[in-house]
Image (cartoon, rainbow, N blue to C red):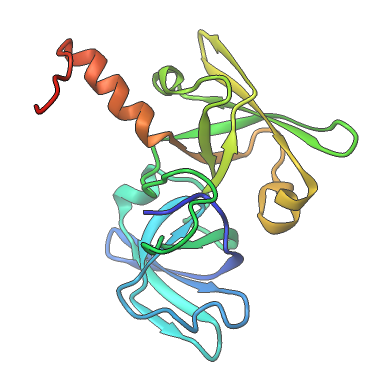
Length: 208
C-alpha cells in the first residue's frame, strides 16, 4: 500500500528487453535506498514495482516490468523522470489517501495553466472511470495523491480538474506535463468498494 505522497523523484536511465517485458534501471536521489532491500515495493509513477537489484551507494535499483504492465501504464517503457514512493509502513503518517499502486487507466492532459500562484491541471479519464470521480474526492495522477475540484462527463470520457500548488510541482514530476501527455490514474480505493456494493444490489448487514 501507498499514500500518494511522493518521497522522491528519480529517472529511468536504462531500459533493456526482458522476454516480452523490460528491465528498468532507475536512478534515485542520494540516500534514497539506504533502507531498501531486494524484494521491496516502490511505486513508479503510481505503479507498484518490485526491486530486483539495487546499489545503495550509487542510489540505483533495477526492476522487471511485464508486457501486461507496460500496456496498462504510461511512461514506464522508456527513459525519463518518474515519481517514486516507497511502500507504506504500519507506523507511517497517512498524508494522502490509501493507494494500492495498481493503475486503473491512462488519462490525457487537456489543460495545464498558471492561475497566479497555483496551477490548474485538467485530465480526461476513460469513461469507465468517471463513476469513481467526485467533487472533493481523491485521485492519483502519476502516483500523486490529489483532490478533484471539478468533474465533467462527456461522450469521449470524463474530464476532471485539480489545483496544484508550487510545492507539489517542485517535489514531483507533474510540473513537466504538457497538453496531450498520458498519465497513470488510480481511483479512490473506497470508491471502488462502494461501487461494487451498489452494483451487487445487496445491502450490507451488521455482523455479515
